[in-house]
Length: 242
Ligand SMILES: Nc1ncnc2c1ncn2[C@@H]1O[C@H](COP(=O)(O)OP(=O)(O)OP(=O)(O)O)[C@@H](O)[C@H]1O
Image (cartoon, rainbow, N blue to C red; front, top):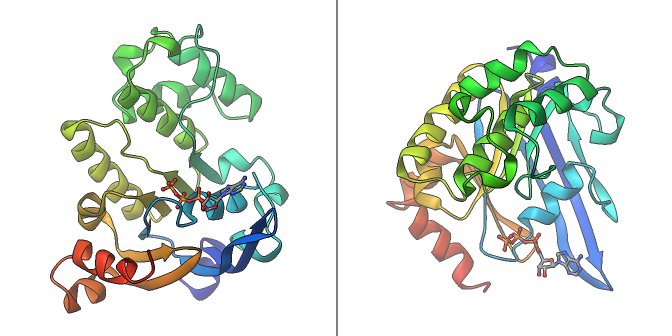
């Protein structure tokens, strides 16, 4: 990949600052997620992961700094679902609607071919649930449907907030393969997680945040070289700050 292709397909977050009612919660957060890699965004509760991802996805505004997909803000991207797939805050949608029609509506409203509905159902292991109502899905099935929505537009970028929430061990294994496949296709995968052991098996890069500051940003291999497991490193880095 050329430098230009890498830039066009990278997520670049720089010097993000955000305050709520006078209290700063992000103190200049910055990191990059590169194409063909899985970047894990890790941190304890309240560290600032969701706040950062909300700004990246245009759901909230930063006080300063930037959060860009290939140099563009989310809100400036044409037909964003064909560029950015996001799993955030679980599944939204009419609980009476079927899985297939939920996907069909999202596809149609974003100019995505209807054939993608069956393809994403298959990709996420939900084909047998195509007629089920959203309200009847388990937590894990809801997560899979959220991933199906994220994949509909075959986006370059995948931003997944706590994607393994509610997945059983088989689902977690499936998710690991899924994420590695996406990176192998050249996609740019950014996922947030508490479950460090899961992330260790899929991530190429680890970015650790605590109390609104980035504490570590390095290739996973380098991070784990120093300390036997990322979990140890994570506690070592965050203990002094908590
Ligand atoms: N709208 C808001 N008003 C006030 N404080 C907020 C608001 N949103 C977030 N915060 C605070 O900002 C900090 C970061 O929260 P954030 O949700 O980004 O953390 P997180 O790393 O995603 O945590 P978790 O893993 O628990 O979801 C927390 O202290 C939280 O209480």
